[in-house]
Length: 349
Image (cartoon, rainbow, N blue to C red; front, side):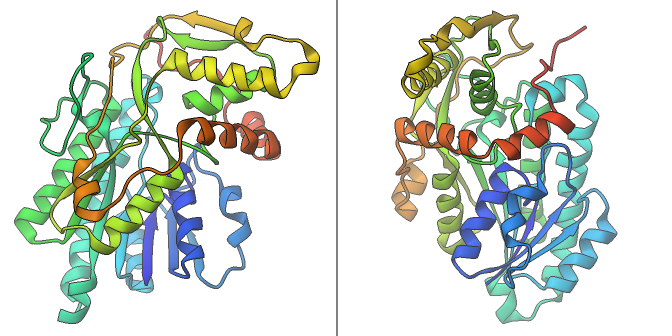
């Protein structure tokens, strides 16, 4: 199978590529290499015959079209996106450019390519668009998002992703482009850029820096290990129903404060000899503007239709993620030195 991946050098994309290379599928990674991408995340594949890379921006249609025509994929998977809510507050234009106009370009290029295929090739082709549960807005203490939940985005980021989802659906309904949309809950695991909650807290705890928690830390998210997410995408890629969407979740609701306390407890156990309490580093800071209170998802559709469920418990997943950052400090220290030094973003001024 030949899979064309946009945004494959980012967090979820790079993990997905490693997963697919292990399955002996051929991968073409088309990535702009923005600040949150890391070419080092896939450095082990540099000489792998199943892997190709081209630096490219989905906002530039001609480069994208040339790459698709060259590779002749069976499947296109769109991970390419600006994803950080705080950065979308500081600078929404980049999110609109990549997440909306970039998705439009990808849809047009995919449609033109699809029309060029013979009947047998058309039956194999599909585009899978990776999105987020943030498009649905916020929940109170009860209820869950499902595939029929109305969209109600709160941030420039989630609004841009909601727009991209609507475009993908429209290209399916209007032009019969074979597509599937996935909306996942919060991911965590290896290769996640340090601006996100879990890696930020892990790295700060390593360096005994303050652990900033927005507001009172009572905002709730559902947490999904990236390996479980990659497995879900693989199953959807093989057996998902065209024209439909699937919510992917971890069945694991935690408050932000819960997460930070768990990280502190793990560090205290790992480094008993220094007799330092990492919870003393916790620092409550001004909340994020428009901060959604709770996300929770009902993933019964993918469970019932495709027999997928998350397999990695949060306790084990968090411990293994901490070990990964401890053992791969050269990866995140390079980011720290050149791209991001754990500075607070998304404050209205």
